[in-house]
Length: 251
Image (cartoon, rainbow, N blue to C red; front, side, top):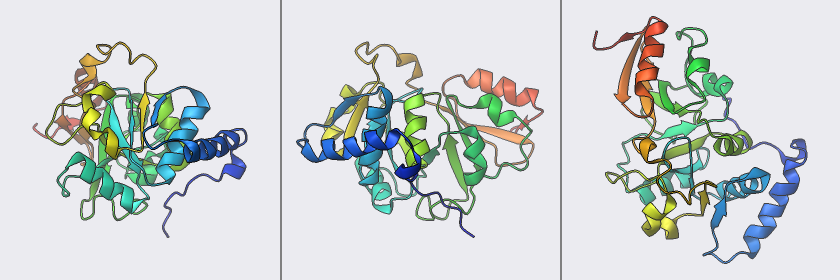
């Protein structure tokens, strides 16, 4: 039986439903060009959630580079994400979730060493696992694995907690430099439903060291790992994998 997650029911969200209702009204009143928000508290989370519900693609800061995000349950949003990125339709998208304890719903973790994921995440890593049947079949069709992110960034995790997993990719056109500030992808603003700014984005040099993005690790083969992309904190990641007895696929 499918266990695909649906959007959290606002009736069971306590005070958050007030912010969600307010966000709906605010978005109805805004001019289409008014789509820039600073990240900060429940108000910005609710705005992002309502945009995603509408099938929009939003630009969000993460613990590494800026990303484009859409709901994995919205087939139109997935298609739109590829179009905005000018991304090869055969190149898979990673997903972003709110909690390490949720990974098993989307990726098979049965053969991983106990506590490995909890020691890696949240953090600047994308973990590649064999996908489960819970994932939307329209996301990365005919691809058996899925990349999963649990970023060390409260705003992103809060959004994903409400709406469910996000399809997440870097905020740039394919084959162009990744972005650490929204002004680096201004040409794509008209195609986005919203752009969310980190409070510290006035200092554009703040995250330059993180431009290389997350480190991508394939853990789909029991007892082994393969670094698909060396990104932020890759050395720490490799050392941790070795401490758990995992071997490089090159060994």
